[in-house]
Image (cartoon, rainbow, N blue to C red; front, side):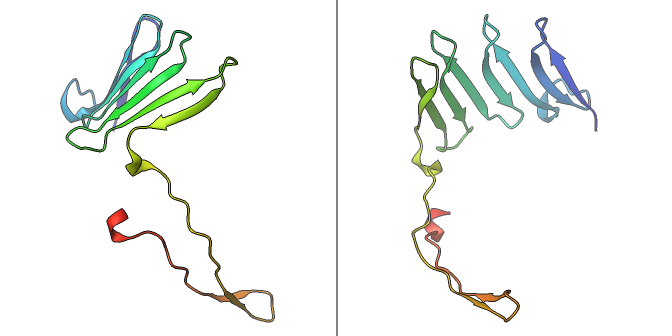
Length: 131
């Protein structure tokens, strides 16, 4: 399998292709840039598009993943302080939010060699509906 990379005159990668493909499944990704050289989009071979938008200081303002044909799209909005440090990242789709495990205890049995011989199962907060 051979991959090729196509670059714009400024040296930015504009496409990643497999086995010399010019269209279809062999085009793994294409990239677009604005006049300042900032990436504005990444289109994957499977149709998933990631779009990038920037604020006046060229900081990433919005990042959107558009998963073709699904309701699982995700948009992230970023905010920064005056020192350009990221303050927050807010997502639009709570399906991707991390849920921490509930506090609990796991019991262990050991042998005389300071080795665990068994561990009791711990209930998981994951349900079939959450998967």
